[in-house]
Length: 147
Ligand SMILES: [Zn+2]
Ligand SMILES: [Zn+2]
Image 1 (cartoon, rainbow, N blue to C red):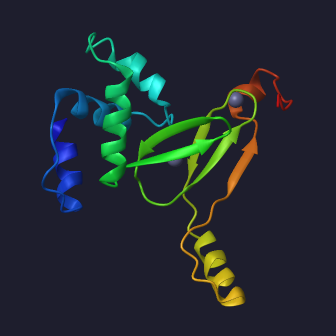
Image 2 (cartoon, helix red, strand yellow):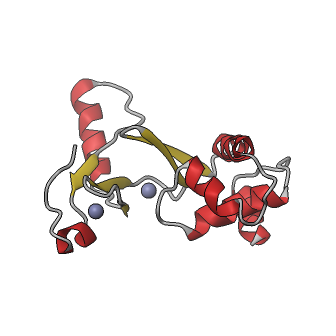
């Protein structure tokens, strides 16, 4: 699993990146998860493997990954979530249970172009977030928005 990390660093020409077992484990965890975990969730999971690890270690490593461009931070509602940097994409969020799904949909890049043409702005980013109810919650009859 250290090889995934090596490869990602190579792709970005990053040479001085320290490898610690915790760091490799955090990267691996994120690469296996499509759940956009919070730092606390990562901590809870990895604590099983590294009982003496503190949550500060998680935060510090996430920061290092972010700095290296390997991890993206998402500010959603009142939580901060993390995922590997898998290129630009959108999020569809269940208003009932908080499940987040990735949506890769390049058509919106046209909208960014359109915004640039119509305003003369140099546009470097945009965000669109979809809110709804996930399939699991629909099946359980939780159709209503909770917040
Ligand atoms: Zn849901
Ligand atoms: Zn995502």
